[in-house]
Each structure stands twice: as structure tokens, then as C-alpha cells.
Length: 137
Image: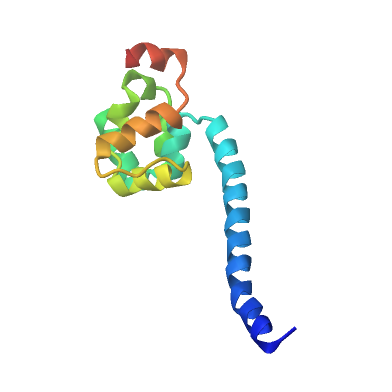
């Protein structure tokens, strides 16, 4: 092999390695997306994963519930009454950043409107009990 051909192959090697790396990443991302998309979670699980304590406090206040304790205690207090409001109303208390974090995790599009983020989460992430479905209508 001449020096010139060796040099050309040497220069192209990182490109091929990078292309292979991108393909492998896309393949693993596809597997992750399909596993994330197949299981939906309850609104309480969602709040536990993506809401901060201050956001949970505000939701508790909207239900006239206790506003002291740990985040877990506040969520436990919310559990019996959470189905009396639409998921959209509850998610309004979350910051746009919290909603974007969830959308990012579930590989949902990130838009500039908070209401779009909420709609995507309600339709793609949250599971609803039969009671919540009735209220949603």
C-alpha cells in the first residue's frame, strides 16, 4: 500500500467509526423508546418522578390538603383525591422545565407551548383509571 492510500484510509477511519457509532446509538435509542412508550404511569408516579416538592405543595394546596411533610407524604395525601381533577389541571402546576424533562425522557417532541407539552404527556405517558377517564370527558 502506498503512503498516499494509507494516508487516505487513515483519514477516513474516524468517519466510518463515527458513522458506526451513530448507527449503534440509533438502534439502542429505538429499543429504549419502544420500551418507554409501552408502559404508561399513573399521575402520582409522574409527579413523583418529575415534579419538585414546591410543585407538589401547590397541588396539595389546590385540594385544601396538608402542606407539610416530605414530597412522598404529600403525594400519599394526594392519592385519594387526585382523580377528582383532570390530569391537565394537575400538570398546569408543574413548571415548563419539569414538563420538558418528562418529554425528553419519553422522547416526545419539545415545543414552546406548555399546553402542548401537557397534551403530549397526558396522551403518551399517563395511564388513567376508569374514574379519571370519566372526569376527562
